[in-house]
Image (cartoon, rainbow, N blue to C red; front, side, top):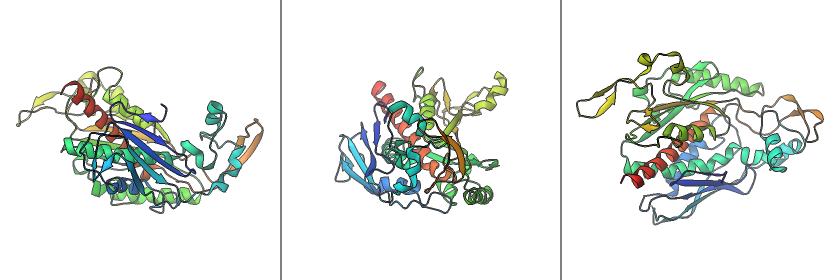
Length: 361
């Protein structure tokens, strides 16, 4: 169960970074949803390695193969299996990791849990596992586009280290985000972010930052009032992604410094007769349930754990040693994390939309 996510729209991912293939199985997708491999490929291409000079240079085509659940370009209601074959493994670069633990990586904790691990590429701890999530997210996005015509999810790089983008949420668009290789919505900040990431790469170091996400067109009423609050499931989804260390929604931690009068979102009825809020410090969710406003949240990503510099560590038997990592790694995970964040949003919203329809049809 540790590799499955969702209640009615449920995805299970499989595969290791340097194994034969990775992929996913999606169960619970409604029938008669138009779906092709190209729908999935569009999102995988945004996630894949080697797409720019500031990401890992591992060369993978990441071509999606649909094995089941789709006939003549539409879903049939049965499990959808998707596989992506690994093509560019260089397992020799991980030889030293068989006995020495990489600092801040999952090597030690996987050994502590299982007593065995897939050393090459980090196995399931690698960001390559997210291929299955992104593929499943593309399917969820198709379900939502069919049933919620106004639905739109836009993530972008909000900051890299101390370089912060200045973004007007009303003008945020996919075209703007994809207009630069760092995937921010501020062209001026993009140049500085790219320069910093390139500097980190040359130094054999890495850098982290924050991804912000704006979700539009989610109707009021999605989410459960207690354990499965919409923001709780979003938080779980985001913090399950590799390298994540923080999540905040709406005003987030800044709201803790406000009074109730300052923070409350007052209601009004707009010209179309729709109940709205004048502000959106709640981030589009109140009492664990969507209120119809934009859902806005941020996810903190730590610097990539694998750096190409010598560091102190220990071996599996506890002997002190040093380790200098080799291989191809992202000096900053944020540009490739953007489609991962969006995919997890699609999965959460689709699952809650199906749950709402099932309970209150």
